Amino acid sequence: MVSDLAHKCGMAGLRPVGARRVYRSLSGGINPGDRRHMATREHEKRRSGHPLVMADTQKPGRPGSEHHPGDVDRERGVGPDKQVEERAPDRPTELPRRSWTAVLRGTLKEFKDDELADRAAALTYYGVLALFPALLVLVSLLGIAGESATQQVLENLRKLTPGSARDVISDAVEQLQGNSGVGSFMAVVGLAVAVWSASGYVAAFIRISNVVYEMPEGRPVWKILPLRLALTVTLMVLACASALIVVFSGGLARQVGTALGIGGPALTLWSIAKWPVLVLLVTVMIAVLYWAAPNAKGRGFRWVTPGSFLALVIWMLASAGFAFYVANFASYNKTYGALAGVIVFLVWLWITNLAMLLGLEFDAEMVRRRAIAGGLPEDEEPYVEPRDTRAWSEGDRRRVER
Image (cartoon, one colour):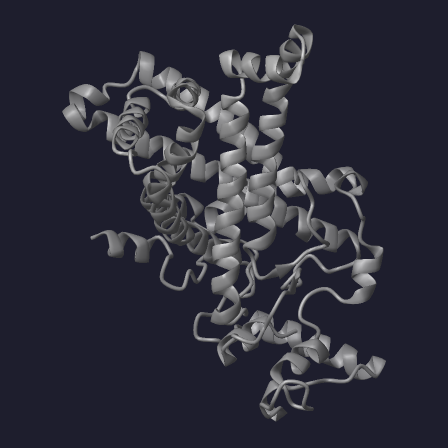
């Protein structure tokens, strides 16, 4: 049943239903409107002397040879050309004002067309599988700082999670804390399990990000698997750093301040400044995921993107609104009984993934509008250059060729 849900939500191949042009024909065919458009483009290329490279006349070869598929993609020009890149704005603030309106409209439209609400449900499934092994690692690491450190994290988690969902996390952490006597051994085993389990979430996010950018996955397995694990480890390290920022307050901060000779004013300043630092760190985590996941070549890594900041703001507002709804209006206890806490927790995770995917879609629309501002026609697809094309099938190449 779970595998059927994951398949329906796009986990098996994740071929987008509502993509603009890249996947318009699942069989690789071309509808009449697209055929007329391509014929016009070919006629213009002949008049301008632009060399035409036809897929049927190319023979596959070894990398670096005359007929290597990657070379064909470069000749054919997958994605915007160099002139578009040179003319495109370098910063989001340089976009025309009308482009921002188009970004908002396009984000909402593509969010619906790409069926991201269903895909967020699939991510919720992978998130549940990844969450509890990750909590095991977190509890093992925080155990080094003492039981009070874990309790400090729990108190802050209770403030963030809505209703009875906080009981699900609190009970899990307390149970893991009671079974963490093995110490370092538990940390090592938990880390290995958590990395592999959490990498399932990252792998699903990679597939969904390719749907959002309307770009087939072209990275071979020997490249995508290390990326998946490295991205998972990076996110877990940043998550542990976020937890340590939360822990380093109150009595622990005073003890460290006394040992280092730091006075009360500095600790008071840290108690205020740690929250903006925590927000920035979480935004960077989202930006790392947005940058590394899709098979789309961007303009380099940015510590904070408009989409990552938007995702964090929407998540905070949505979490607060959902917590208020659960506390005052919802009747989950009457409907689900003992399972109410689990249901509330799952809904909250789904809302979290909705915010993540909405921010990803917003960044993709920003990239599209940037290319349009650089001279790319609005109906031109793809609007971004792929990172790799070696794993593309012939059907993928036909659908993205220009």
